[in-house]
Length: 126
Image (cartoon, rainbow, N blue to C red; front, side):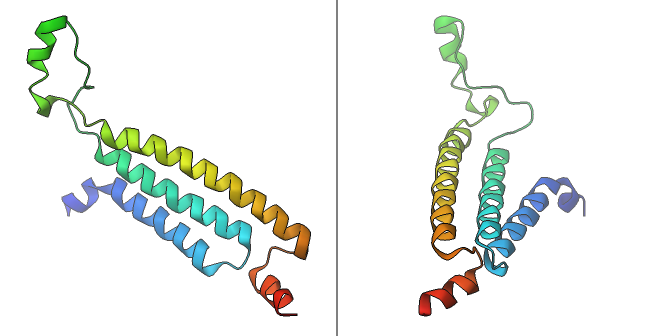
């Protein structure tokens, strides 16, 4: 039971992911679907960032010239920077996707005067 409680952050990420997934699948309003997609992406980013940290680790920066290089071989003392770097890229992609999606939603609203998915599909069939 302590292992389950000790990993509470993973449970929070799973709950956020399911909230975002429900909003994308269950809602009919396109803005709510977009917000759900953003929540889903954010939960994945938080999950990957949390996997890149460990207790008692330090940042992987070599200092003190040549003496620091010999200490850098002990990799278990350092955090893995790769998840953090990849998630910075994911954040940029997420913001870009959000901006393009908002522009598309604006164009859809101007054309159909609604953002309800069923209403748009009904108007498209006419």
